[in-house]
Length: 170
Image (cartoon, rainbow, N blue to C red; front, side, top):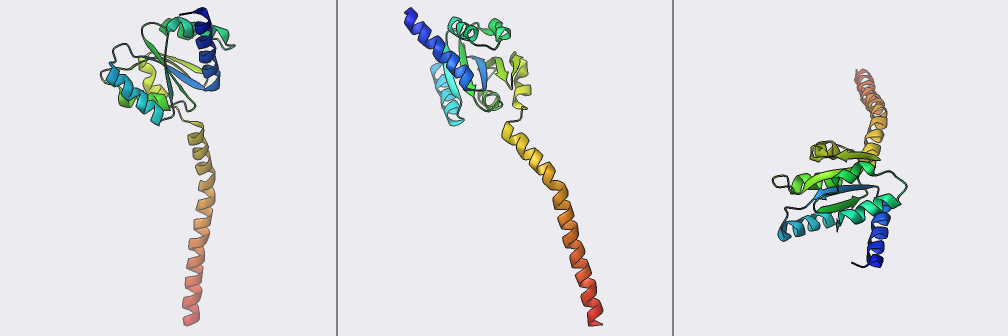
């Protein structure tokens, strides 16, 4: 590969890393063509960008960025695919759904400005809540007291109305 091509790939990887908020390093060494194609289709459906990379080029792309990605350097062995996404837990759920006998295996992830190293972190990654899920929970918590007050007033109003109507009929 020519040096110009390598530099182009490094700059594209660095751009993708900064563009997307989260990325996963996945070991696809033992996957055949059919399994890889299936994984790519699932990634496309979930709006996850999957890129197979050379470990040395990804390492150089990490070095060009301001953030210190050194905890991920030890994971750059074997065949690596990078899953880029904007929602932190989507690739983790995807890997968990698609994985057969640990293939594809999670090497590491950078999600919510934290590093997750090793396949044992997959459960922690699936439990991360997206920004929209957190906002929905906060809104539900804020609406709960108001709904209780409104329902109490409505039920009390019906009770008072029923008592007054009964007294009026007598």
